[in-house]
Length: 208
Image 1 (cartoon, rainbow, N blue to C red):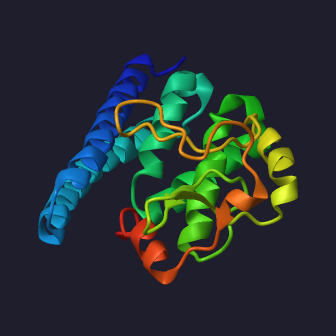
Image 2: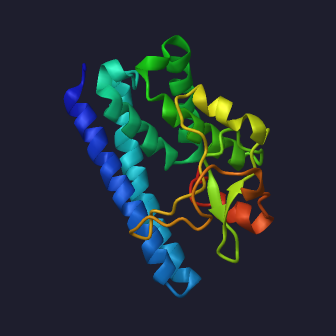
């Protein structure tokens, strides 16, 4: 690994990111007014931007987020930070990871590519390809955001060393929850986003 210290820093940024987002969902559930929720969300967005800025500084220094440069954990961490950043950053990082993958699939955290593809496609109001994105309806029931060609989803996932798609697990409440049961996801788990659901899904990360 060429940049061990920067890899450690990326992993630490990822850990802070994951912890804050887990706490965010728990906090939002307890708040009573939309004004309170917006304030908490804006605070979180500021912290995300700070982490994103540092991630991009590191990216400039290492040139490529390859495993040979920053290891598997570092490559994964940079990808995770991008997933939770703005739309423009997601597109930038996706292009970088796809370019590396096309040259050497084993020299980048390939499993992080499908979630970036799916998030971008959903923001652009297209069906996702890899089934990585779930949401929750107004009645609190989770659903799989529509997948293009659901029958071929696991074959596409396998190209990036992802396991077959499973029913969703909710981790943000502090314990594993299986609201749809366990086992492989089914076509019937899908639902088209309503306008309100779309707005709720994308408002968090379409900030620029």
